[in-house]
Length: 325
Image 1 (cartoon, helix red, strand yellow):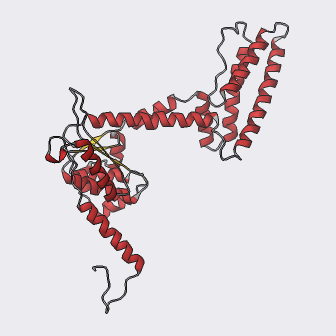
Image 2 (cartoon, one colour; image 1 turned 180 degrees about the vertical axis):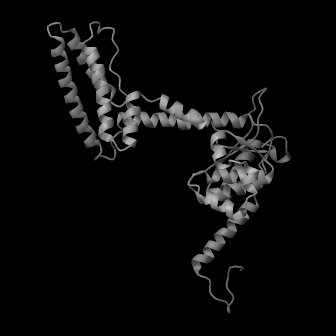
Image 3 (cartoon, rainbow, N blue to C red; image 1 turned 45 degrees about the vertical axis):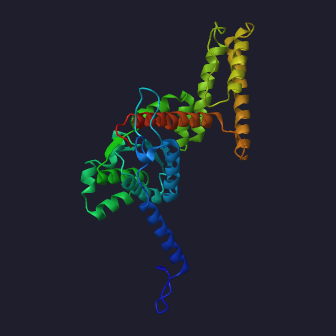
């Protein structure tokens, strides 16, 4: 009834009425939120099931977030808080608002941010309290300038207002960068750097220069039986195995001079490079084509070093936090 215009009033557009109703339902849903059932409390009886039910209710009230609730460990001698994980899309404006609403409604003892000390200081160079003390217009202007990380800033401000301790639970960004770059083969790193600068031809050239240098060393080696195989993270293992085989066969052929061995090896490398270029050109026209070895190496390194390692670090830090929630 509160959204139905009176007979003498100006009619409200239907779209605006629907938006107002949606906002009212959202506000009502957030207002109904409460902290999760904790072990030892009356609501915490059968805590795993009640915690799952609670998480579903929170998820429906905060649709822009992904809500998961984990009970404390039950193994003997272990302890830890009940964890409420709020997953966000870093470019979601709705998530910025809902993260603050969640912290205010759930009243946790501490709020863990997926930030390291270095990145936290970029958001709050003078601390959270100093930022919170800025005029509202200044805070809004600073938040509007953030392309990503708005939900982290919002959560920190909400924790400050609620009196909750702020914990930084991410590995240092420089350590993550070193781990990621260190896990990449040298030629993949060089090719990826050239591609990032738009120098795709230079990146490809660098890969084949590396392969040529290794091939030359192997085919001219007098102890080829003990020499290492040709290695490339940017080319397929089948191709590098074939090049290694050819280089060893030429090295074992004593009827050839060093110049003839290298000439034959170079011809094989040039043919392999032409075939690889043709395959890559064909692959770019197919949506279902598998990733090229260099791209696959970059993806595996990103998944392992940037995602999985940091997830494990985050979870370990969260589990060590004191307090029930």
